[in-house]
Length: 166
Image 1: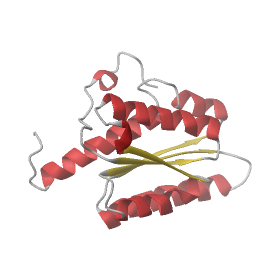
Image 2: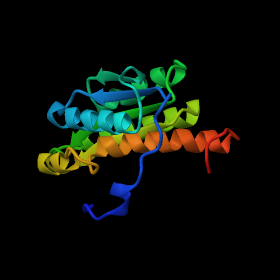
Image 3: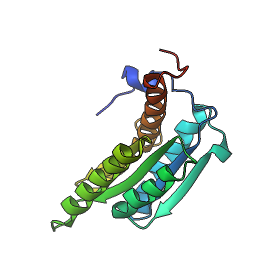
């Protein structure tokens, strides 16, 4: 568990000015995913993204995240995509199937398209664990996934020889 004295929580955010970010969020477990979405939007806004540069797309569940992320990535409209969802363990194997499919699918989109796609999907044993990871502060996993997306955009540009600061 991170504490408020964690230096990563106080680090300056990467610049989101002039970046277009898609947020793809699952409606399943919406009480959690809405908080993840809000955390991601807040992080991007605090980092300098304008409201019209952030587009939110809803999908039914975590399983559908990779398809929507691929459509967003191949559209050429976005610098990065943030995928958000919440899968809570139940009594069957379904949890593992959905969590693994979502993770592998999101990674495939990133590798296949070259567009940074981050994985802000909670995979918890209980609703309480999910709520703790969706707190409305910098420990929110939606916030963290948005910041990771910004980091990856800047890293990619720097690696490609762009004018990003080192």
